[in-house]
Length: 378
Image (cartoon, rainbow, N blue to C red; front, side):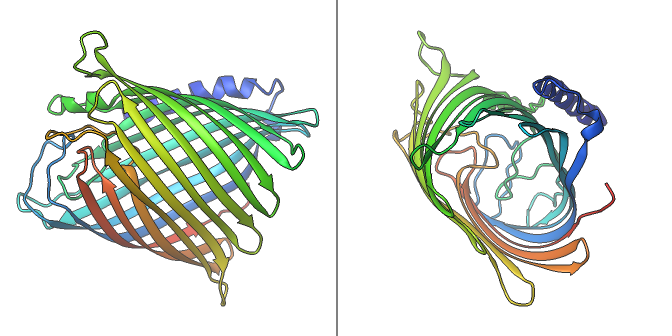
């Protein structure tokens, strides 16, 4: 574990160093912690869905499992450099979740998850027409005692990403944006679980958008992504490795005021030289943050996704994704200040998501309590 954390830290430093150099000025004397949040929480989660998973070597025979989870974490934003027309910002997020899972027939499990991410972004204003940015980020995850289904936990991985983008000012009421990124994902394969290597991928993507409106704005966007899986065969002698092409188009409405609300709709078409993972998906999402009496704040978030495969097959499809591919998620959270720099919240959540078996879905219901502390004096 320590060796992996050191590896993640060294790779994060390798990403941070060149991006900071983009600012072209020393930043040491201007370091400022803009936000630091320490989180402590606990939850009870129930899972249902009895089927095997390609990336889990253990098969159990239960339709329902329950987990009690304790977690702690830290996230923050550090301004490394700031000037009237340029800035360099570091953001980080990490933590640990320890669960005690029951309901299985073979044995009870105690999965422990460590996750962490870091990103550095340099921004520069160019004249009066807009701004450009460059971003480098790394993300890592490791897990011990990973349980079988239906308690689905994403396997360990390490990803690195670089991105550049541009945002323009409003021209006749319309502002434009574009973003290009490159990403590499390496899943942690073990001697007894070599299938995880099949999920390794390299991808690049381009997204462009146009936004109009002020307090209530509308953004239309479209994107295209190229992904290669060097360890997955395509069963085509002339083109032996799997390559995917993914097109996305979407529309979102955002309102910012005393109430923050967003509604979006997007469609995705994934095509491949291997017909197993070809699918069409449509997603609707909604976000609401609003004040309530007695200093409460309510946060509501929902993503409802429908997905269909182009080809019917009778064998497993590997469908890599962050947590799960094309998931439907909904949660309601109530937050209230408890003391200076301390707030507490309770959240109710529901998930229906696909594992690494195509068309095999698990469901999760959970209730969690969380304390967020923002220390001062930095």
